Length: 353
Ligand SMILES: NC(=O)C1=CN([C@@H]2O[C@H](COP(=O)(O)OP(=O)(O)OC[C@H]3O[C@@H](n4cnc5c(N)ncnc54)[C@H](O)[C@@H]3O)[C@@H](O)[C@H]2O)C=CC1
Ligand SMILES: CC(=O)C(=O)O
Ligand SMILES: [K+]
Ligand SMILES: [Mn+2]
Image (cartoon, rainbow, N blue to C red):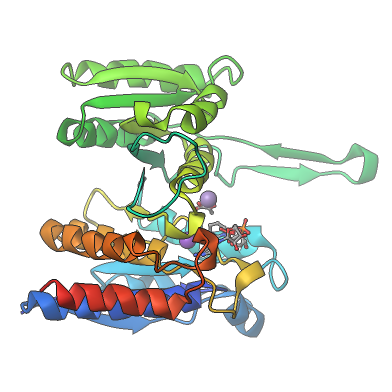
């Protein structure tokens, strides 16, 4: 029996609704497999935890997470309780940084039965590789003075290693897909980091002569995600650009509620973390409206990560069988609850075995 030990962090808002549902699906998948088991240990770290303890996670939080094979996270953030920059940096971003999860992989494609808001989406199937450890999301800068003299300075950090890493990852991935990498740049406006980004992209691309490349300014690229998403295979982007692009990727799939993501540690020193693209969705919390598919598709990415790609495909097929039947939540125009959709997916997982 192969046992995978998972640290679960449901976090805030709908994270607490979708994580337990996705765990049920993983248990069902493991049963079908027969030789696989998931053990979940749940951690209560969240904004409520912060109000009680003054921190998003205990001082030895990372030590507690480290022995696990992976982290399965829902969402972090509740602006009504804790400012977002404190809650996200105290938990989510800290884990990404300290566990050197330098790659954020976010696929976007059309699922059966789900209507894209685009008139003619043409079966797009793309993956954004987002730099996940530095860039525009760096805590370097500061605030000084008061009132009309107030100044805020925010530095972006682009190291050669941190820039090469997601690019190499994108090229390796493209080699297994349709062989095309697009680089998201903005070297016409950001005069130091982006010309550096372009130069590194050019250099790394020399190592992969069989992969086609192009480079697009992020503003145009964001528009192309809407007008011709089928033109893209793998896109490599900085932390901020990738963050924005992947919400567009989610939107053109039909809902941010279905978009999956993986924060990957590539050096094997720490666990990787799997969490959907969406946040804690305070506007729909507690109503059974949360779409569980983003979290469940994220579980599929976790299966892939553990070398169970066949099982991962099996799970995605089960998800698509359910969406094809129109068993979907309100964000996709349906009237089914979080639990209804999960139950239908579990039934499909068991039926197909
Ligand atoms: N990785 C993470 O943990 C992230 C955390 N956040 C945090 O979450 C909080 C809310 O952020 P927002 O900007 O509102 O983004 P959000 O992704 O939570 O919500 C945006 C919109 O999408 C809808 N939505 C999101 N997930 C859904 C699901 N599974 N099913 C149905 N509808 C869904 C929401 O109802 C809302 O209308 C903030 O505190 C933010 O900082 C935001 C993005 C990512
Ligand atoms: C924080 C956020 O928006 C993200 O990780 O996508
Ligand atoms: K999330
Ligand atoms: Mn985001």
